[in-house]
Image 1 (tube, rainbow, N blue to C red):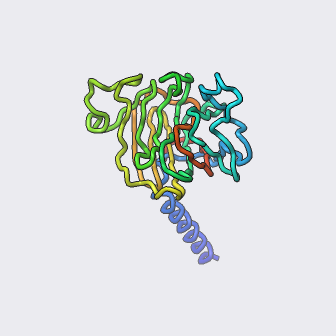
Image 2: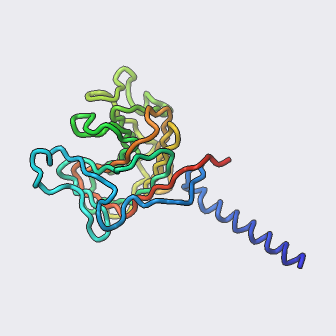
Image 3: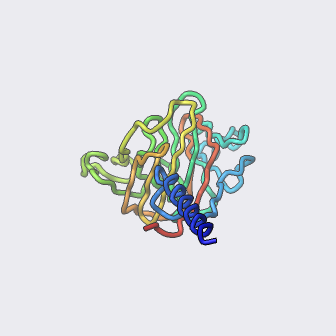
Length: 242
């Protein structure tokens, strides 16, 4: 009986170690609640609302967000945003996406609040860029964030800003993380307190701190290119791991 107990203990320890090793490659260093929540049900846009300025004037025009073959699709035009009805704080967001045809521009916005705060189009937020070969750049949209090597990654300090005409782009750490057009990419965005951290296909591509917002809605862009999403899943973060 003692040998069997020791064997069970050894097996449990091994399984625990394997579970830890399996997540260390790409998982954030925060402990997550087990209650992951899919923000997209695969059937319709329930839980989201559309903000597309062109539809104000032409309400019968085709909107840029549809569901096709179980995927959420941003058609790219007319420009606008698909915004969650709910607000979120302290979470890990996993997005699986691909440019279905010609690669181009899109983005995921976190901590979104006031609609059309920039250029009468973009909601106040921090954008995590999905532009092809630039995935993980930050764009400051009437919110701000800091990263190491700010001058190198944002330009001369006197040009920084969060409104029209200012240096709002914060370069990522690498442009080599994306897969070729047509293949699926996985982007993970961790929002914890006033920090935002981004992984693309398992590698860290950006990490900002002192963000001027720590909660808000999540938005997906329509910005010129067709993009398919097959997974948009949010997992609350309950506490930091040791």
